[in-house]
Image 1 (cartoon, rainbow, N blue to C red):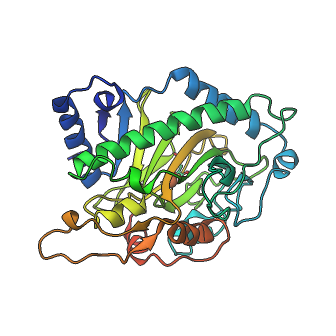
Image 2 (cartoon, helix red, strand yellow; image 1 turned 180 degrees about the horizontal axis):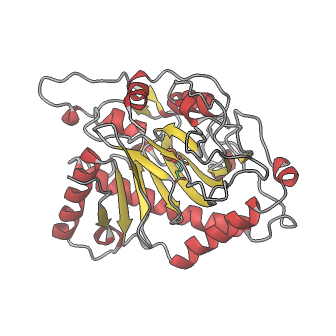
Length: 352
Ligand SMILES: O=C(O)CCC(=O)C(=O)O
Ligand SMILES: [Fe+2]
């Protein structure tokens, strides 16, 4: 069967008047997609086009600044906020393998997320909920407002997805909410453009990587991307496939915590970004924004008993969201290898 990322209209869950029958159809389609591909294109999500256009403009506004200006918005590696310059992160290290292009992912990024000050009545640890660093209005006048507007909507879509997940897994409707009322949520805006003057080999033998192969770390990711090629996902047979969203669709993919919860009934699909090399030896610029819905830092993720198939044992030990995310970020941002044997084997076995 040719590889495809299924398109699912989630309108029945977004609109108040969706009937139980309509919702059951959506939940079944999501279950199927989560078992097989682990990536979904959702439509009917209710995010206005004006908002995603605004996000794209905000991304252009910030990344269009001079590198020295952008670098003023960096934070230490253990603080997942602000700017990260090209070639300062390595997503493959979040999986625990050293690719030959160690710390060479050429994406640059800007991270914003929920902070301790967003939860004044809770004593959350600022290690997992650091305060945001925003570009000044002098440098990027529209950025903060547009990014905040999109952040709220992406969070709503992520939560809608978890309500569908609960139905698809026959869990109580509030199963996910019980682990996500102060979820570690982060929006990472990515810009893929080679720094000026970078030489690219046109024979394709460069192992130039926009973003190295990785799985996302949390529960579910809502991924907005423009339509420039570059994103590739790994199928169950070990081949990479190009994915670009159909107009108006948001991509949804599952993170490791959902794979752990469901004993891998559902998959956190490996993906990477290799933007196309143009004939003049430059790379076609590409933009994306990944909203990571990761769960409460202290929530314990334990295999859901009903997802353990007959004769199977739990594949993972329980872990807190905070410990899992910290170990993963220690790989990608701080250059420490993370141990994640199962996914590493899949990347190393993959072709292409
Ligand atoms: O740029 C993309 O399409 C993917 C980005 C991604 O995988 C991520 O930020 O985790
Ligand atoms: Fe990702």
